[in-house]
Length: 478
Image (cartoon, rainbow, N blue to C red; front, side, top):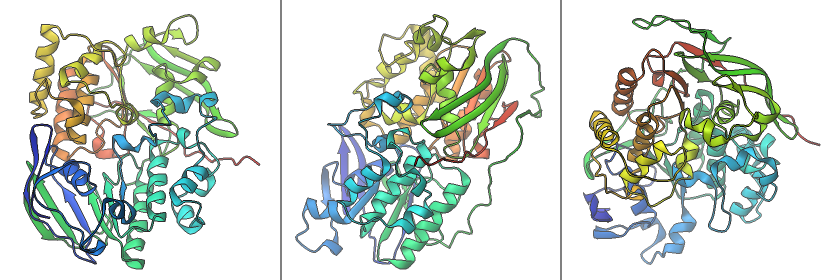
């Protein structure tokens, strides 16, 4: 890149970028939300027009075409483009829970065959990424972490010369993060592929050699880095229990908000949850912890009226058994929810104000904000140091800014039950700290929180209880 500048809409997102990647180098690209990481990916992939400067790929030769770029550069998107849907294969985020509506969706095997044009699979790679046992499952029912592994496998089978990965560890449990790192280390050692990893890392592959830091669309720093020793963080295991934290004494309430009684959940022969018994009382704040595929998101979907198997189980929300006459919209009205899946399937060309107004409709329907609602929204934007105009179009924002807005959308609605499924995915440490401050300030003693994360450091200090989901064993259909 030589003096590269680029715009999205009317906003300059890259300004005079000078950067070179040489053979044998492996780069991490980092920076705060809005720094230009997403824009840099889009520029490399040819998704935005370069207004000034020169972008070239010497390994493709002097007459490289866009088609050559697509063949030799692989991009693993872990943001909204990871939904595995195409214009002719429309899906919606709840569809993974409806077995009858996934019949015509491809299996993991068929998805990989499409991406590899029928070539023989690298079963050693699939085994390393724990995908062999998933080959005959519909890709749509995979958890977010399993989907990440599938997308990486598809990209590596392409045998690219340049591999770009957006938010490499997004939604992955510690064991899977280690698997990703070792897979990329082996790739760097055994092939000529150069890696560019975008986002924030608690640990990164030891093969990474350089780091580019962006700030407000400019290059802030460019340096060589030492090998990373990796992270020893592990997901805790054990029985569900309350935890007493400093300044947050346990106050027991008898008012049940959620109750699961001997709940089972399965897709065909694959059991996801078995005999779940869990009671959440008003004012309790829970961290829900488990490995990829353990059923965390499915559990939340049963609470939020997105999962049809709730009707064949004993699940009580706000004291009422699900399936006794209330509509899903009545259930949703009594809580607020956010998850990576919602953002993955969100592509509406709404303004920021229109998007935030959907917090009050329990759907993606828009309405005007009342004066007090608008004041609260602006206050939250200031608290999170997020400088986005209300009339900005959502798709023109960076993935990080969109994630912050989804968090704001969840907390903007005043209710007594907040469900946050990995709300801090892809955020830098400062942004997570600001979100913690907001939760500490806005959640009162009678408010209930269900919070999913794979990072212990992301658990808000207001959390009073932890619920552990065991790792499930996948049974293979004959």
